[in-house]
Image (cartoon, rainbow over the protein chains, first blue to last red):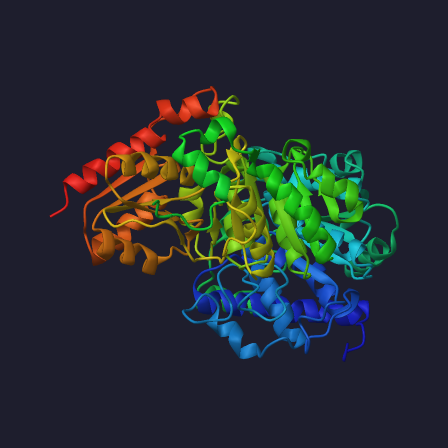
Amino acid sequence: MSQKPMSVEELEKMAVIIRCDIIDMICTAAAGHPGGSLSAADVVTALYFRIMRIDPKNPGWPDRDRFILSKGHACPVWYAALAERGYFDKSHLKTLRQMGSILQGHPDMRKTPGIDMTAGSLGHGLSAGLGMALSGKLQQKDYHVFVIIGDGESQEGSIWEASMAAPNFKLDNLTAILDYNHLQNDYSVDDIMPIHPAVDKWRAFGWHVLDIDGHDMAQVVAALEEAKSHKGKPTMIVANTVKGKGVSYMENVCEWHGRAPCQEEADQALEELRR
Amino acid sequence: MTINYYHHLRPEIVSLLAADDLFAKAEQQPTRYSYAEAMLELGEKNPKVVVLDADVSKSIKTNEFADKFPDRSFNFGVAEQNMMAAAAGMATTGLIPFATTYAVFASMRALDMVRNSIHYPKLNVKIAASHSGITPGPDGVTHQGQEDLSIMRAIANSTIIAPADPATTKLAVWAAAEYDGPVYLSFTRDPVPAIFDLNYPFEIGKAVTVRDGTDATIIALRDLVVQSLIAAEHLAAQGLNVRVIDCHTLKPLDVDAVLAAASETGAIVTAENNIFFGGLGSAVAEVLVENNPIPMKRIGVRDTFAESGPYLDLLDKYGLSARHIEAAVEDVIARKQ
């Protein structure tokens, strides 16, 4: 609504802006989760600027497509996308995690326009999205529900409860995107408790599974468009990503899961991103 | 001539109390079934109501809702966490989900979802929990939800209702459907006497005096309202005139009713089939200690797990039956002045 869907080139440019917002926001807050925000940035950009049927002036529109960031700690990417899309003024980004801010440390649907579901405790969002998708079927609405889950998050048992249920309920109006960046809070997902082979697992659970480069915007767009129109099954997009994508010293470095860059580090990051 | 001290009781219940024959002769029903019956009527009236089950629909009889409204019934299998967060998602779209399971699973296994995805965003989900307290007698400890009321009381934005009998269970379910926000409804697995009828003045947050009295007050909820009425009748035979309050809504507590009972009767006993930390006894004690610290005693499950056994035998062994309430009332009355 009010903005025409962006081309792949425009989306790539917007993803840079969103990554810069993420760095700025977390640096100002002096706390937050840059690594997983940056890894999800391309998918979130594609959703908000091309894929989803939304109206930023009417965030509660009953027929809107829904988005849930189940890995809620990566909310800086969500806040950046919402601000750039016009849900609220960009000046709010500077208030992240401050007292009285509309931008909580983890997403709060009662405080932030455009947040479709509160998140933060891992393993809830896929179930919540499933509930929204069931409602859509029951009420014969044609909205689509998109949920980003993390790879570390997929160690939660409830992810697999929801993964079992969504194909059983034939929820082809539900798409999950696995942000497969291979790092979690402590160490590597592959060392702690691997989720591979992710594609085989969700296929065995009955999902329509797509395996893509989560930073190749053309692939991201194609996968999301296919997911939205695929009938009979929910779609799982396994988005192979890089934690900290776009900032050289953050890429594939576990410590940037939940550490804020200082001003000097932020300046370097912004320079690299804008190159 | 006899003065009728009772309010809202069915006439035959007053006679059975007088004859001390309530459990032998009164019509009885597990309140989980009363819930299921209420849902059949509610489903008819309100198309936004949906029922979510977790493989205990035949036990709670919500399978009858599924038969009548197949499109509005969703069985999640043995996956309570998924059910609770899905209920939250459904509520965001305007549906009114009743997420139905046993108290231990609703309040413990799925508590993270209940707290973070339902109560934090204050979503309009009704949590229907059967097997509250040690009412699932024969099933034993793993299925006896003796902590659910205490746990749910600690969650911000919670409303907790523990109705005493079949009729008030139906009224509670219908009132919960009208209320916008999360409600935890607590039901019994085992049968309890049908002491009230549908004319009972049920209002969320308003405790109801069901027996007048001036010497002390028993404040009770769920299945111990009946035990409290039996206790009050026994105490009347000794010349003690005891008020009984059906405190069906644990949260928000009817503070006015508690303070009125404190000032008018000078002694209070609380009675709950729930662990006696953090539930009704604690809630009433908090009000009294800050406002009017009169003699008080709590009836509840002591710091222990129970065991398998017939419901009424368990109540007696674990200190929750009428005779325990009577002794507590005598104690608080002796401590007055």
